Length: 41
Image 1 (cartoon, helix red, strand yellow):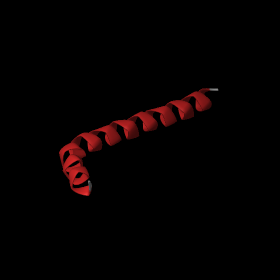
Image 2 (cartoon, rainbow, N blue to C red; image 1 turned 180 degrees about the vertical axis):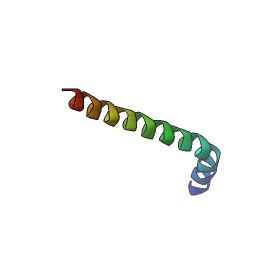
Image 3 (tube, rainbow, N blue to C red; image 1 turned 180 degrees about the horizontal axis):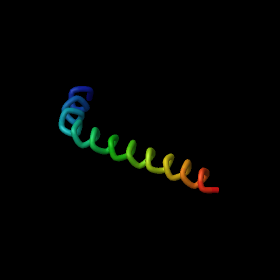
Image 4 (cartoon, one colour; image 1 turned 120 degrees about the vertical axis):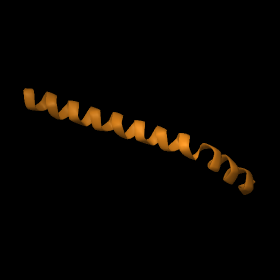
């Protein structure tokens, strides 16, 4: 069981990292947009 999970993790590590980066960028953009709209008002 754990051996299979380790192999899957090794295969998908790069893809997971890319997903995390994209999520982080999206969250940053949302926060910046919220600050911008609050500042404009």
